[in-house]
Length: 120
Image (cartoon, rainbow, N blue to C red; front, side):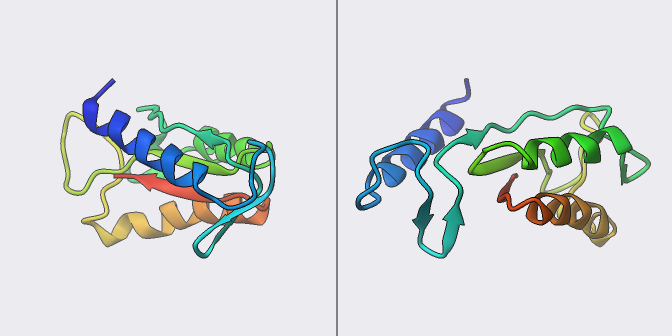
């Protein structure tokens, strides 16, 4: 595991452990302005068959719909690049053309009461 990801995970878990009055992993909780069903996280994994010609595939959208219906406090999306990289055919935040597709994923998760973070 990359050291940066491990350190980030440790920081997240440490901060969540500081939440007042929350002792159970499955308790509803709030972290700053973010209300969470619980403290269960779905880690970021990217499927390189998820995007075709700048559009999210139906398989990809369906996966997020299914995940958002589970009891997961935070879904961390698959990789989103800051700038294009031909080796990884995934969206970039550098191009506005991906915003409508990324918004579809966010809307699906929010519709089912879930929260989503982007892995950049």
